[in-house]
Length: 251
Image (cartoon, one colour):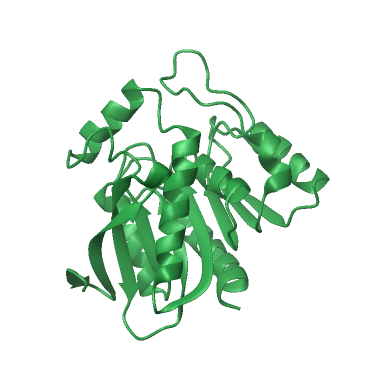
């Protein structure tokens, strides 16, 4: 049963069977009502499994999607604050790609197992989660994906950055679902030049996609709790998200 009702969502903490069958914590938000509902896997940013991303998860539930936020940093620091867990993950070079695929796949399976599920599942991610959303969509059978300013899909991290990840643009041909990309014109990771090269690869492989880049916005423009927040760009981006998931998850 749900732990509590917050706004127009019923929420609970759950266990997800992730990579290699290992259990991690997740935050599950249900719409109020019997359904059926499509599902959304929400992948948090590098700052972690925080209240701002839980609010995003509840926003999906309030708008008719069952959403789950897997704690991708659980193994490094179970029960720790988001800041401490993120620091522990940075110290080991970030979340390994194979582990991310396993954890996202477990979250999608949980959503599909619910009695209220339609069987359709999408993925969305922010910052490092944006890259991971692209990775998940190229590695798992999904119905829609949204990449919110995910860096290092095309270009590697600069020297000195504590992330041991490689470009994954070579997976583009495996993309399993339509992809929406939302980016800031003032961002440097990813830069507009990097996202343009990704567009070229998506077009070359005949994939269904839309990219939108917002003037006056940089990295993290959706983050309401950070100085990077840009209300106009975020509002426009949310409308794109509702249109995209409405088209591919609920129609």
